[in-house]
Image (cartoon, rainbow, N blue to C red; front, side, top):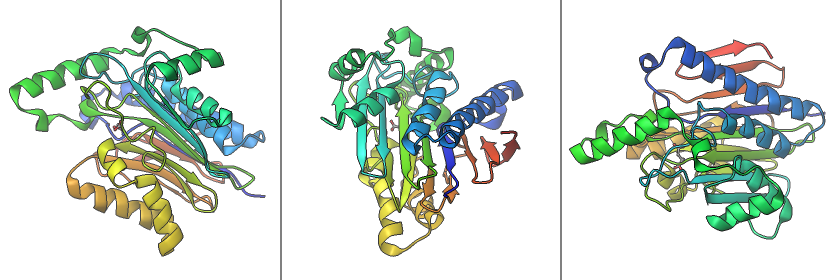
Length: 316
Ligand code: ASP
């Protein structure tokens, strides 16, 4: 019997440590731990990896701490346009929605598409209509808005006018949530959900709904969920690239992931991070920014969460 594992991220757009109070950091760690526990319970009650990653991502979409669902970033028009995808490693089944405006939990719509198996990706109003017809919870735009994201949009617009965009912090720019899991049957899955980056052009689609870029899972190899400058994840087909390095070069999960995140993407000077798990239950969570909200539960049931370099064990 294979011992399940799960790993999650809440984005590599993490604020400088001193910019938030200890209480705010504790809230983020609490919500990460809760997402992990929810996914873990699914895996330990006979659920599949794909059930587990969906459940964990829903918790993070519902939390205001992360840039997905409630708490999503604004585009340049002050609108939330949400992207999400999910992939099942056993048969490469996948679903994705992009530019969704009214779906409370975009990952649920991605999952519904995976099960429907008539299209992998739906975009814009048709994604919203599909979710509504499927019976998913629909919300108004205000549901996604938080004070922190409104402030980030105002700051980035001011910096764009002043010509100081380069000084924007990773936290002002972006964030995403994602989960990867290995279940007791040895199946892998990955899911990702995001509001994209703050002040993005209307209609811009990032890597999170692109299978092979921000999300990828293939049984026998690995499952990957990414966060960071989406355009570069698409150019490098990051999820598929990491899987290919393992499959074709025989690299370990950590070597393959480090190469892509800390060398290939870092060479552009863009922020990037991933969580990934391989077919043996190894977990890695590399990032090239100051921090990445992240956490995992090992095969022994040890739960860890981290924001910056430090990682803390908390009770399961
Ligand atoms: N990867 C996301 C996107 O480009 C944003 C992020 O993770 O920061 O839409």
